[in-house]
Length: 467
Image (tube, rainbow, N blue to C red; front, side, top):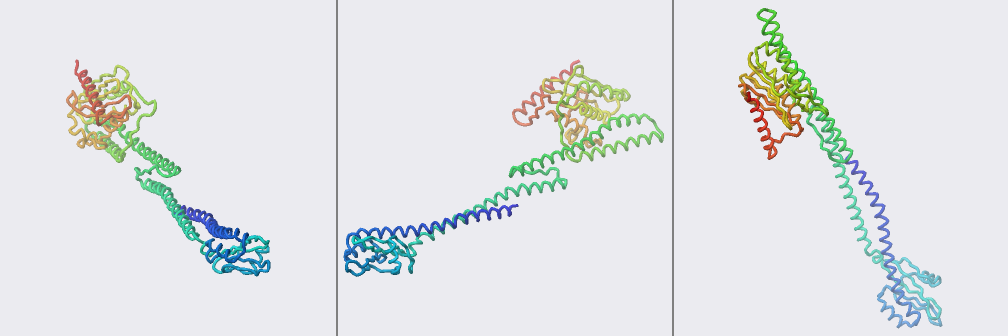
């Protein structure tokens, strides 16, 4: 495309330059010729008044000399009143041409060796016609023509070179985005999901780049949603698996009981494998759609009703606070339920039977805090536990439960913290932002947000410590 554009521009510019330069060069040449003959006419006109007054040879010679024509002027007087014809100066024109001009009575030009001559008829006082001959050399008729043609050639060449350079730049501007688009398509086809194309170049290619990037984003989002769906569904299977595993512990001894426990353990391992495989690639966080939301108090009551039965079987004491009135959250109900099930399932899985746990909900003007705490041994490495897909590294956890909760909180502009609970074990603090703003992490606004959060948490902790 680039060289095709250069060739087209070169051909068009060359034709335009030739179409204008050739006629202009001929006009310049003709103008130089006209200028030379105009000078010859002025010289002939300077002699005409003297011829109309006298035909004396001496006087005419002085007139011709004063005209400044040097050896380039001649005067031809006809024979009259008994006088013979008189020729002053060097004659270059043929006699028949002089007679023809005298007979016609109008000026004429003839070609002679080395140039041309102007034959100008002049009427004498006696009625006869004299002819003034002015010689115009060839170099005078072409004076300045070569320079003018050289200037025209230089201008034409500059136009051609400039047009080629501009066409080349335009070609690069068009070809480079097209090549990047091709390279981006190849990279995306090879599985490089981060491949994107700069949105630059002509309007059409820029729109193509925008469409390509949008398509790539949609592909990445679809793949991420696929992985998230597989991971979330697999993780939700762990909730009934946890109940099933705990129930199999009460089956006692025997081949059937051992086979059941082995099958449950194998099923758990397969689910964990699916979770780890689905979490290999970094997923995209999807915020709740328009109109999405739920009552966190209602969801907590519903999930605690499910887990309370299992807690009674294992002798666990539990407590729920802050769910006596509706508390709206800008998240999907199913996502919040999955997050709570993930945290409560971790409590049952990673703490001993009889370990107490609690769920607290606190509502503020612009945020909601959900605390899931237990009286277990705690988490030795909270950072590793929060790492996506890693878990604590000591209990065989996939870490997906905490990651689901973190993504859910971050979709509202909040976050998740792990610390020590008042029960003596682990406390998972989930901060949901109600106004949907991004959490500020640096600068004055970040410090202000942290101070507000600290005051809210402090108030919440004091309210929990009251009898």
